[in-house]
Length: 402
Image 1 (cartoon, rainbow, N blue to C red):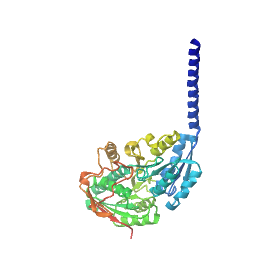
Image 2: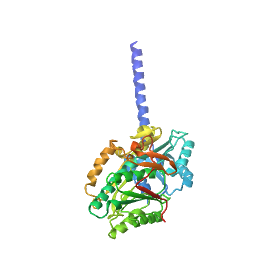
Image 3: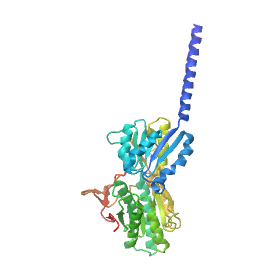
């Protein structure tokens, strides 16, 4: 019996040791595997939006070193998306990020046909629509929070200008250069306007659509038109530096004109006129998605954010949205202090942005209205913005520069 006991003990010990060896070998293989990840971009570094993704290369390499290899495909028209995805597949990519919602349709088709590749689409809204795929994901920051903050900064500047008799309450006019009429753009400029109105209730805003995300010539024409109509602050949701350049040109000539940016710190381009800017911070989601794939885990289980099915989002509280810069020379006094107060309220969900004595009208169907007195909770169940109503009173819309 003693011999049997010894033999049993030795066998058990050997089994345990062998198990540890196998586990160690598995962990070592995981650590040695190189993950190829790809990015499909609608533009290149000349676009502030795309540049935010490109800048992640250094951060990702710092975190993961030789465990990852990064491949970019730039300036991809929507029609060429299939080719770009196939090229990244041929490079061995097992994780692909589609950086524009323009790619969402094909990105999902590609994911359906390539179940061994994880596909993540920024600013898209189709992860939880049929068919729901285990390897197709969407993500976006709650950018309305950043828009509202920059609106507060713009409102404080308007208030300062009124107090200094540079403008009147009646001429507190803001212009907004917008790409197109979709929920992402409408939600953004409405949050911006409501931030302004929280400081200057008499302020008005004119929104001009360019019809394109990236059109330097048209954005210049739109900005110049808004400035000629008396706008003293210009905001934007387009992808070139044209509005910043146009505002700086006028401000440098001595006119009281200011600019609020998006996706980039524009103070090097508009040092006189730039007030503040905001952007989405893509780093948290992308770095966590990379870690999940490296460890063969479900992406949503590794993302520190709100999730619904295969969709993820977060805001200021998780650093998914950020203020890029504030110009201390141009900004109104105590702007930084005020923004800290408002940020705290937004992060703790004590401030509902889309709420007030306003009626919103659906631009596609005027019979569809929304009473903002009841409040609208943006990004409640999805990463993609849902607010798509034009406020009747205070905001006017124009489709093209004439």
